[in-house]
Length: 258
Image (cartoon, rainbow, N blue to C red; front, top):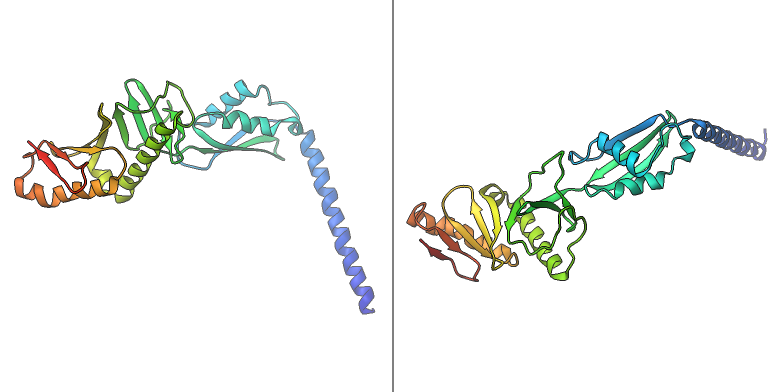
């Protein structure tokens, strides 16, 4: 067989194979499209438990309406994603159907980095500064900041802070909390952070009666350095419980009071 003819036959075979694949794919699409939706399968891409599969079903029943029994190709996947993306604890939802007759939803939940508590109103903030309410199903073990929070957040609010000043404060707090978590020493030793009426942060350690006046969240690295120097130089000399307050908010100063 001539080389040119052999090449032509091979090319024709590949074209025929491609055509067969297209036909099979379209037949499968038609078959899937004629299926009715048997239900929803939910997959979570993280280990948080803010949202459950039952919650997702409830969100869809209320926000989307009836989908079970509908033809699969009539299920509005964009609307499904929009309904779920609108929930405060859900960062991103991806919806698709499969040949077994199910609507599938892949959920990525928001990852909180800090929790705020003001009176009886509690809420989280994620890495990007998105605020969302506490969830009834799950409590995330993140640092808690309470007291006179400079955030105007009503119960049930979700979204970014409303003013530039609030956004700036929250951004600095998130950086501070991330620094604490990365250091591990401060994450393990500081059990509570309270905002005083004048805006100062008050750091409360797990052990000892000292209360560290930290000042504003800006410039936190040098302030933590001064806190560390208190523990390594002043505390060994004076002994535990000698001072009740330690002010580290001023550059180059550690002001201790009984």
